[in-house]
Image (cartoon, rainbow, N blue to C red; front, side, top):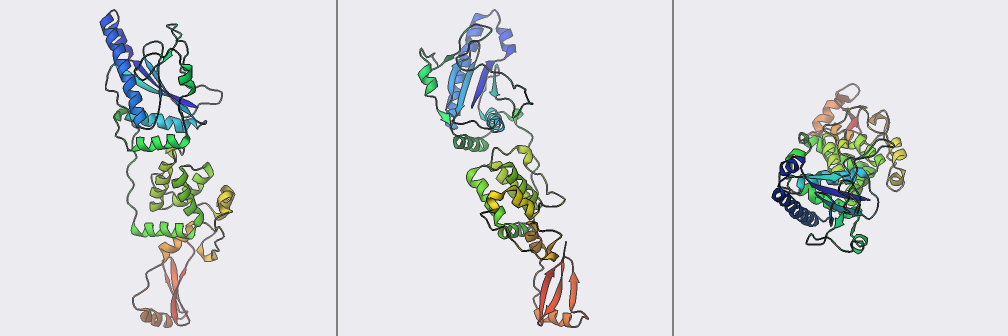
Length: 345
């Protein structure tokens, strides 16, 4: 229901300033300026935050949510904020709470004192600050009227952070190696898959419009699109659009093994298959079991029509069974015309 940025003086700087009042005053002044600057930067990103004197040596910047959101989503916001916000003072440090996306059952994450709490070391009560960084005599109206961020506002901020330049490269996670560009043949297979399966096409459109995918919806997309080179890129694009989908769900290469069956798709996402056309009739020759990837297999297996159909017809007529077997299928002669039939993979 909330998140916080914690701005502090580094321990080394405090130790060096011990017994030097002028140095301590300088550090406090720099913390005060940095707190105001960070609040302004966050506001530019669409994140209105309350600024608070923590009661000891730092500042807390609080963000409140309109409704409870998954910690993993809020934690992702924090990681991107720490990479983007400018804090150019080497004596100051910035942390984000929650520090973890999840904790063990019955466990606790890292602790932070709630707004207006009393600092256990100094005995001072934390104070909310006004626009100029001065303590508010009556903090309660400000706290009650603090802006509550909606899910869409938080997602919009995540989108802006994704486009913003990173100022803390050391905090950035290692980037994945770029995917190899898909071949035209594989791109054709992906388009055939989406054209043949309206359920998958609807899921991709749903991800782009709502920026949300349930676990079962992620599974269906992964075990269909994830089997194609072009599908991996389209899958990762959809997952990146949905911040609640964990980074680990993205693929680096096409999957191996068997794709999800049509029956499993209907079991996983009945709220979609009940509304979209999900009753494809596959020929037994299309594969061992009905699955959406058959649409793409048909596109990959389909050879180009020869420029001279009469020559092929003549060649087929000369064969004993009027059949020419080729990789992925066979040509047969029907009513004097060559017809391509897909073989079981």
